[in-house]
Length: 431
Image (cartoon, rainbow, N blue to C red; front, top):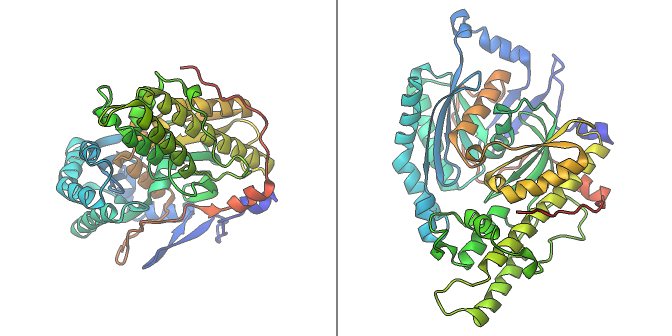
């Protein structure tokens, strides 16, 4: 069975190396995972081959406008980031038209700052890499529209980037992690776990069936009106929950862990949010006057954070066992890479560390700055594709953004069929 999994999403070319075709609603193009293709690309001119290749990365998939210039060795030559966090904190969440307007107001400045810092002119770039999927349609559109103007003006190749693939591979900038490895992506918009076999070769083991972990943490924070808490006025919802949880007692509230009878690797957070909402509503009737913050807010924060962390850890534990049973990961010295905005949560990281310690895996996380959306991860993904000669478009006509996009080949059904029951593992964290 393991050999069939390992062969998924791979097709041989005449050099014995994989060939993949990516499709979108309006265009398709071939991606050659072939070093011979890369060699011919480099040999286009002897002088060009001697020059270090440089990529500009552009990120506008949600509410951060990011740009970075990176060379082929992975050195960040220049970067800039404009965060919309303060604006969206005031509105209680991301409003897509507002995010779009702020991207339009800031994208030129952000890109120019990255270029100025790098002392690289657009004419010196080897390619431009931009997130085109998945994300907020209005936000993605701003980045792609600006990119297309640059491509036309400077006649540069285009490397379209899958946002989640970029998150998955960011760690390779810092750690020499080799394929295959397990990757867990947790953010405000996504939650998925997959095997990374290559730069564009992923096997999806499970994903959220409803909400994302960052989304539920933000919603609970809003429901608790933590933005009014004197210690949390400048924090995002997830940051506020993590901060107050350190002072709380999670045992004060007994929250049911999601999907306890589902022996797969999918995630679900909507039921947990409903549980917490009912608790808050009940406590509000008993405990406070209008406009006040619940005295038990710290305990609620601790309980919801632990339940989210426990749920993620258990699904990850099952994914590790499934992969080792089916030869999808090395039996020894395997790696779990955790990325995305929620990966910055130290409690969740420590909970996952318990799982990796128990299964003989290494836990690898990018620094918090690179866990959230940024231009650096897009530029790095562009560099990795440029090195391999994968997904480089010299004529981007017809390219479009995709708000919803699949991630890898879905084998979550195989995980469900395996119905792996987890051995007991005590997920106890001491603050």
